[in-house]
Image (cartoon, rainbow over all chains, first blue to last red):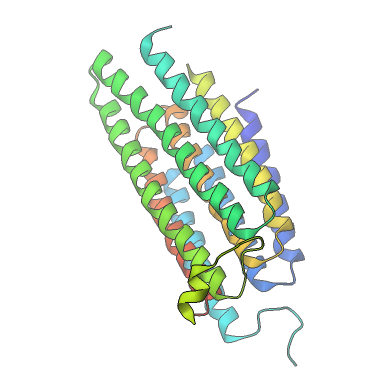
Length: 84
Length: 119
Length: 85
């Protein structure tokens, strides 16, 4: 039983972080929530004993996606609905 | 209960307690810099101790069963703890400097040397 | 012996849930960044512990790679917040 509880908490955290990514109007905070989603899904792959998928998810999600999102935010506006 | 088990339990309890104190400081403190002061140092210390429990476990299994994979486990856990110590300190310093540069000032501070140095 | 490790992983997972609360509440962006950094540290610690739980030695390497990549990500966000990027 106690082996299942961390996995359930990680899955709940995945749902919460996905909702937060949708909810934030500050796009930097939305990027941070997307980063949290990728970290937690990497831990979930790790719990399911797929370390190769966890390594690739950490490389793509932690390193690349956050940098690309921040470059995009720097080129546009930081807050949703600003501008125009 | 042997000496090694007592050592492992002690390391795990110290690690989990210091991680709890760090997250408690993250939730309860009023200011950005006090939160950072509580969180980054306490969680780094606690994570080093949980990794140290794994190192002790690997070394004890290596010396009792003479299986080389447990020595591998101990070395890799020690490397992960060393990287954790370096990277957490550097990233906390970078975030604090960036926050000060972006205009967030310490709330109850009496003296602010970084602000004076910029003038 | 295995139960102790999985109990520690359970405690660290609960602490991750409390750190997410600060990521929701945080008034400024650096608050959210340090909440994310806390989650990173806890994930790395629980990955090292889970390597003992599963008795798979090779998957501890994931924790090292993960720590270095999250360091790069945090430095990038910090440079954006400081206005240097």
